Length: 178
Image (cartoon, rainbow, N blue to C red; front, side, top):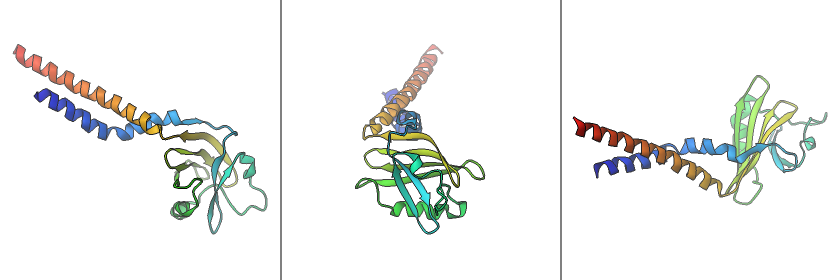
């Protein structure tokens, strides 16, 4: 009976502790190479505001026209301001919200993940330069994505519980032999 308590405890704790890892393992299921057939969001940074423009073709916004007042890259000094502005923009669907992740890759290059979240999510991952963007991947998942992540979490937690059970069983057998 004592062994069962340890195995169940290991399973429950690993369910909680491994969920972020499970979400990372599930990520490739929802990320596909960019194809121009989807409508995707692109962040435009103007001097006084930001816009998220949904485009079917990136040629609608890039390369920058000569008269354009916007850039694609987020100036480091304005990053927090842009993140706050994103939250005030109208969402693409009622009840959804924008999420923005920015990673600096070099002096003039950023990796931007811009997604709309509700029951699922959809968005674009792209490299942003001052005057051009290079699409990397399209991300999309429906409400079933949670089941995929949970299934991976249960499998990882089950493996840990099985490992704990095996170690306890081995220790018990070893103790009986002595």
